[in-house]
Image (tube, rainbow, N blue to C red; front, side):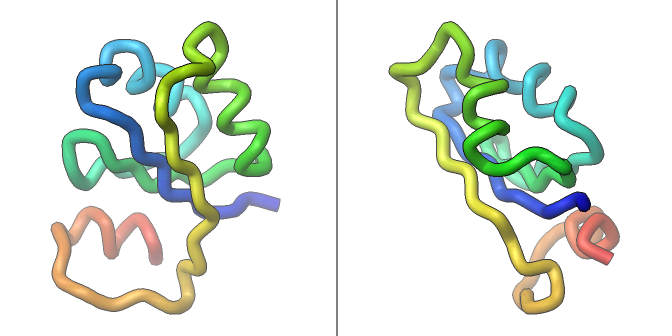
Length: 82
């Protein structure tokens, strides 16, 4: 079952992590270093997959509840969550 995650990392690591995050499944990038991703993996499995070889880099991954959100954001984010 797919879950929705927020993934955040330091922008200076973008060349390494961007292709790895994109490979996880459907995604939307809403700031330079912030992603919302749909994946069947757990947050730990996502971390292990995208951090391989870069285990000392800071990466934040958290499951989101796509039924409880509110705010002002680019419409592509709202469309992705729907």
